[in-house]
Image (tube, rainbow, N blue to C red; front, side, top):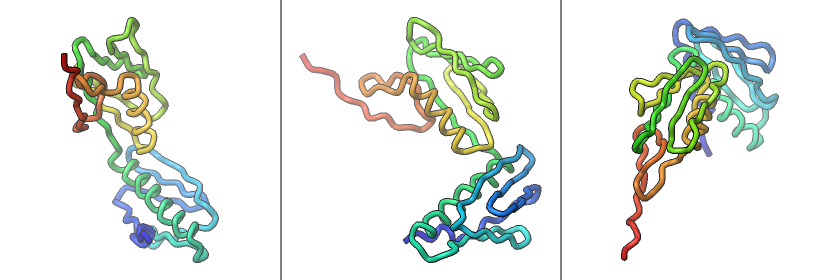
Length: 177
């Protein structure tokens, strides 16, 4: 049995939490996020500490308490420090260029790929083969990174494609004659 819900969430300075019934809103220097908590999960705020517990002893309630604690912890981290995900483009002629709310990718197709960024996400291209995705919502940052990677996932023979920074791609041996 996991004990994630037993760990309290400590609020750093500059982060404000408001509980309104089963609605929680977290506000910080980078922005604000809201979340609706399941009715079987109880949240208590003591000064700058949030505690989570299941209202009843059911297994699903305990699981939801741990999940809620993790999601709220990610919200607190997001509004105070933010999240970022780095992608690398590996391949001859593979390039990326950020233009406002659009990311233009050249990935070896017969056409350029233009990816429209959702609200709350910013993209930088420090070099033309690196993409840095930033935002306050961890799930949204990961989802955008996965969508960009899905345009050309790394292939196992030459390793070409879009990969996460630090991702290990298992290479296959080429066909023998």
